[in-house]
Image (cartoon, rainbow, N blue to C red; front, side, top):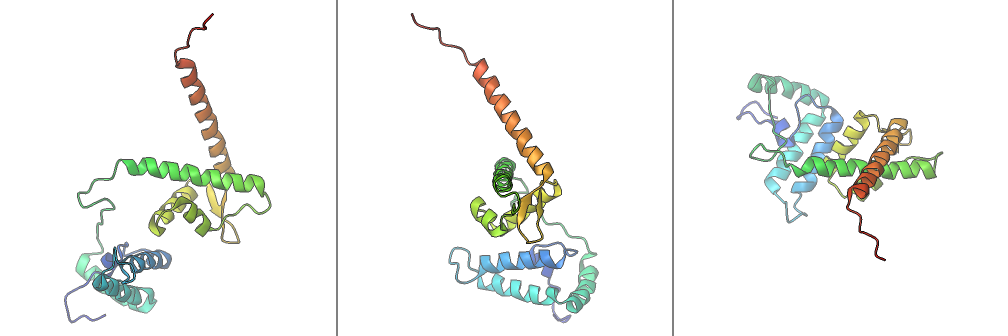
Length: 195
């Protein structure tokens, strides 16, 4: 990190907020390094890959990060905005529906695990992510959401498990779905019985 050349926003390179914690920084680094790595021909970008590595090398070191933060604040006033949406600023309308399905699928999986293995209810995060088939970034989002709602937790062993609130949510959702199916079935016109 040098002060000689033009200012380079290392947080922008890693697509994180400048006040993020070390874990978020590492997750962003791993995701982007994997994405731009030369071994991935579809997304390989050697220049971006090297920028990501250099940004992470500086920001993972607490002393270097503190020094860089002074430079960052002087150049940005500590204010940045990154749109999580596409380039046009619009959020895909299908994304929330897909996310809701993923959350329900995750909860059902963890519900089944706890019901069948009450003394060992946890499932490894990798197994859950594999079942969902999502990227590291999206998986972190789903885990954050489900934890923030109080529906899942991380066990002492580092696995994911459904909570009591999560079980209540699964049961309530199942009851609502059953009632909706019954309502639809009752509203369909009945065929007259043939003699």
